[in-house]
Length: 135
Ligand code: TYD
Image (cartoon, rainbow, N blue to C red):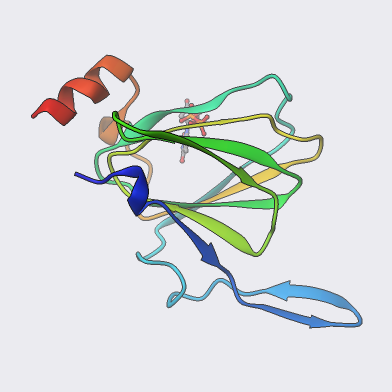
């Protein structure tokens, strides 16, 4: 089973010149094949997003604009990670509970996902998540 120590910050290569920055997500940077991309925007500051774990989906979360905090939880340990750099991604393997909150004004949360959307592979109930860890 994965622990929060398996959650990693990924540096996304960027090119800079006087016209600004260009960041490139190539397949060698992401530890899985990307099947889906979705993004959250116009999120009220008081909103809490996420609130689930996945049985199959691996994700990389990028703060394309603005900032927000991701709380990761493996059932034993929890950690709060601020994302605020468009050239950094947070890799979350399967089996990690995540919540996303404290969205800044104008924040855009991009998610690269290893699977197509399938509600059946979500665990949205925290007690079910804890029960799964016990075996
Ligand atoms: P939800 O999983 O609650 O969003 P988050 O965890 O990021 O806060 O999803 C919100 C709604 O959008 C829910 O009805 C499921 C739907 N949805 C899709 O239809 N396709 C998708 O790829 C995703 C991620 C969600």
